[in-house]
Amino acid sequence: MAKFAIGERVEKAADHEDGVVIAVFPTEDGKFRYAVDMEGYGALQFFTEERLVVHVN
Image (cartoon, rainbow, N blue to C red; front, top):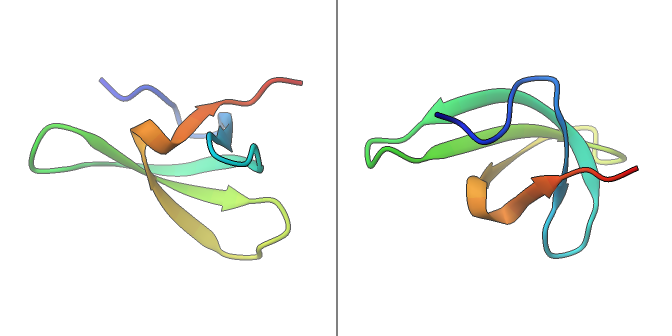
């Protein structure tokens, strides 16, 4: 089961830039990758589950 859901606000663990999960893709090895609409970039970025954390207000 995916750790994050579509529509959930997340942050990149490294620098805490935030965005919204747009799509979730299962990989062949049973893990998940996420398409995230990052604030200020104007494009989707793709991340592994390990590179994201829940957005804290």
